Length: 109
Image 1 (cartoon, rainbow, N blue to C red):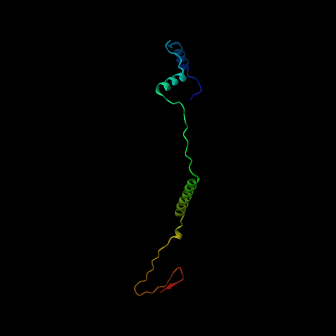
Image 2: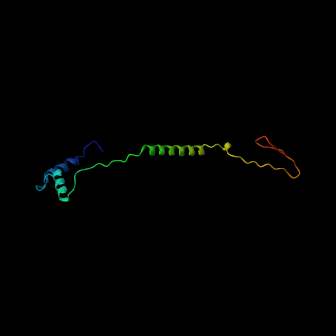
């Protein structure tokens, strides 16, 4: 909002002051509320709403679920390709012999 006053503001305020009707009386809001409350049987006692406290065990359970979910997602995202099984196909042409050494040190002829 600009800091400078608009010159039209003074003109409007002057007009409101000079054109006020005699029937315009100041409004007493408290009195108006009292009349409305009495007429409509409104209880003016305001009771604040209480927030239900979440039990500590539920808070701990929610935290554990969040940590477990985060750890699971992190382990799946950061899984290195070398940790997954790699399939290799070894073949020999007709009449040819080959030797294959498995990861456990077992030789296949």
